[in-house]
Image 1 (cartoon, rainbow, N blue to C red):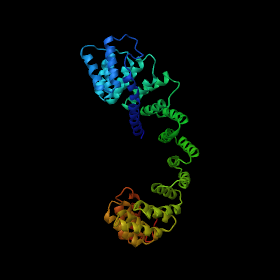
Image 2 (cartoon, one colour):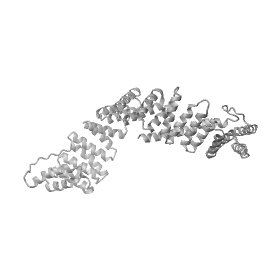
Image 3 (cartoon, one colour):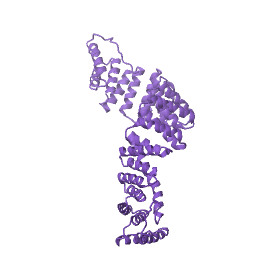
Length: 451
């Protein structure tokens, strides 16, 4: 689960970086002449060509700008600002491979030119070479005289996106150590994902908790939900429960918090508590059919079959779900009214005639009503259609035994004994049936109960 979440987060991080980094790229593209960081004296010829290129770029005549810059390089007039500006022109025309080559030339000509390293990283990103993009961002950080922490942040992010979590962790730790104040929320978010990608979940938790305290709006909700998932995945159910209860108090109109609290109680096997939360949730919001099914299950699990029957009857009135038929049969059996389930079973069989599962449910329900011969008929019809149903064979054996059809009972139990789930019970009954068949114990106790 965690890996999937991290992968989704990495995809979002990549899109974010592609959008965010193009802004500084455009800044450098439009900056002509000598950047402020550069103190060297630029040759007059280079300054002249850069001036012409700037005018052409302002007119959006990038093709001509590329032509005059390339022509200068072809004449042997090599300069890192010419290569750099040429790279910017290619970036603006989406010629990312050509831009990458131009930036590489620029840093070869002058390795201390930070803007070229920065835009080289951007070009590597466009070429989906994230590891090299991270390396270039690090070089950009190191070459700028005034250290820009964003370069470290970008480096950590692209290492993560490029599936190099160890490098990403090293860089994000460096970022936090060198630039502790102020720490931006996006740095903290990226650090969480990096920690999770390095299987350091416990270290990620306090960062997530801090994020929730500091951020607002929809993003805060996303992190609250994510933190709940992390608590559960780390078996920290008490923390998950405390968070869920706090969230429902803080924002009772948000359905996801109620759903989360139900899920936490289910994970803790606190089924009565889960049902109590469900009851409140159902009063506040319209329940989906899936939620109604879960609520019915909880009623059955907590020994409250009557409200479960009511929910299941409503669902069955507009559904063909055979699982619901089995559940409503269980509900009626629990209140000692098994006949109440028969109309629902018959209606389901009209829609799915001959369904072996429904026939088995019908047979068990008839058994519970005491109609053993009809139970045997239904169960025989089930196994005739699907001989792999060990439970149907076992039920058929019991029904035949209770109906004093000993040969049929013995035959069915022998079949049931072939299945691991029914083997023990079937063999015990067979021993009894052998005594009955010999006339030694016709009144042998019949211990079976469907409940």
